[in-house]
Length: 540
Image (cartoon, rainbow, N blue to C red; front, top):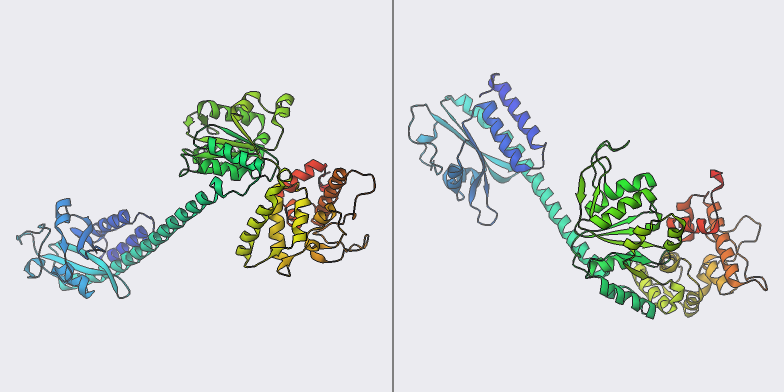
């Protein structure tokens, strides 16, 4: 029904309403259909349509319409310059006809208009949908029984404005489609890189111990058995978990990693299993958990030994029945997901102490894989060093190499932080190197002292005098060599504690800052604080 307001007000209201519709949704076809029906309602048109050229054949087709049947829409096809629609597309100029039945170039391909003029003239408007000088399509509208050149000109002006609005919407939609296509392409490339990177043959390790790990991964990957990765922090448990995932039938499905130690106890259950809106303070909307996100693929539960007992019960149910309930819901959710867990904790000791459920332990420990520490596979140190050098040289645009005496020190060091510590050291050396070759005296003091070398400052600088207050924050001072008769292992442990305490003190006991000073991860710093019994004085 036509808008009861004056024609001028109805036209302005129609333009405003169409603009609002076109900007309110990302479903362009639905928005265009609603816009055409709005034109019928506000301006009294009997039929409206949008024509677009096919990108391949350039055939102009009726894509969206209001007032036409599906058969009529299918018949409305034109070539450039053919009929009124084809002329509008070719010239980019509007055409307004007071009675289209009297127009010789009107082809009536839809067969919707007939020959009868008893109901009055059939006014017909065809305006270009344009962006600048480019014509993207044609907007048509027709009305039975309204006469007058002035009314026709007013309709043409209104539809021309609306054609520009539709053109803007089409251009924006096309840009969004290009971005989405590019995003999908980049995602495919990323997934291809991930699959290539985490193939078992691409993981560096030539020692007998690592070859045994690789053999175990190759055997277990095709199955859906639960795997428990054991080993110290920094030994590459997540990389091995990804290799297991990539080597199985779920490689093209999600791999979701969860660090159970990084989440507070109050949030871990929600993170794993999701929650319903209003389940707790701050739950403003429903959220899927990591298990649902990993459905069909693999979930990697790192630091599984840190899961609190209440959450262990729910995890046990997932392992047994492959179902769980979101927080705040009683409806069971079924998932098909493979579980790979990892820990550096002594689970057997935790089971004996009652802090880890025995039934969960046996459910997780179906296929245990032990990752050896770097100090027990020294033959992997040099290949790993070369691998990290190549990677960080490429990332930072450098050509840094290690001298033979520097490599000898790397071989002698015990690497308490394992592969991650070596990776951090190599990146720090590449970034801070002032010369193409990193020498022994350029390495951090901890490594030089461990090899009983004369103590010097970081990267070849002389050490700051003791007690002067000028010691480097990045390299806390250490004695040059262990006192006579003191076991080296005990001395190195004390040295690590002093280095950690010095960095924490310099960083104001902010773990993230101390990690940056030491070249470690925040997780490593927190772990070593616990190991050495260190805690912030501000919390006392």
